Length: 487
Image 1 (tube, rainbow, N blue to C red):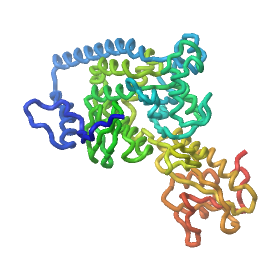
Image 2 (image 1 turned 90 degrees about the vertical axis):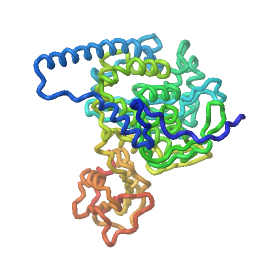
Image 3 (image 1 turned 45 degrees about the vertical axis):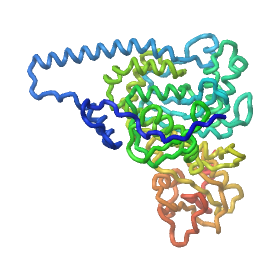
Image 4 (image 1 turned 90 degrees about the horizontal axis):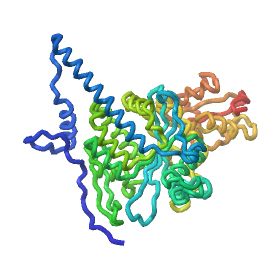
């Protein structure tokens, strides 16, 4: 296999909107400042304008609104071209359009984002390199992202237990067999990936959106690059190239302006850390893209619409009904209202989900922990401010009680670890917080209605040491209630 000579990549994207004749900003922060200044170059409106100026402003606004309406009308046809039938729906086989979401996107929905590695003459075949479940609540203006590591083992329909990223490839190469003659390979790959994720996470995947990596790169470049605050330096001595060689990648910590190629490398690099860190970087880049779109404002987006729509048409396919103007407006409105602190970022990783078994690179995750993480995703930003693992200890001397209460708490969205016996019988049930987890402690206390004098925000002097991988302990006493163990 040919190997490209190692090189040191430039860590930044090129400077956009740079004033002619002025020196190029040298540092990343200067580049970011230049980008922001470029957006503010338009002169501020004067105070105390007369009627003629106000009339001119009104006419200009009308023209801009008309231009925007024309652009949206044009985009409706273009964006409709990337809409894809969903083979999972019986109507898709009959050639009917995908089901339309609720009017103005009022009800919550789940979209599976699939990053597809599809290079010319690819030796390893097409595959899904990235899987992110996005939960959107339009009415409450928040969204959540849950990244799924590609080495996670899941039950793939028609294939059995395999790495989850094998689902897309199997559907892609067996489209007609799985979904009928005439099914597009890309649609079949997305459909089987969605079915696999539904079984793995226990949720419904309403829609699928696929983007290949060249499309991702083009979208970022069309936006003029994105601003990313890199939390720690990234050094990958063997980043894979399109010709199956390798090159050296280095991106320093701090505020950076990344062009499309560098943003793609930053999101995909795996050798520098782990697949779990890579999931966090991918979500960071997605947030940066959203921030860039919002910073431009709706009219600027309209000006960019032809180029962006062209990029999407070449590289994106989705079962979302983008040909429907109400859907398009709803998505645009949500993008404008979605604040950064209303985006929940989660990933399946060993800090939040226990590993049941690991065979080579195959990872088997604890099913209960996965369910609890999904519950946190669906609960929204207010419920995700802290992560706390709860252990139930049996001090009531009732066989199997701690396990049943653990199952009930897990079904209620709490992150739990295996139940255990208390060191000694207890007369009263207690909650002990071994860290600072006030929200989870209060939720437990309110749910179980434990007396405040037996709820400890910090361990009392006679408390046993904190169990391994545990933040809060619930000790079941003789006063436990049978309802705690569920129906």
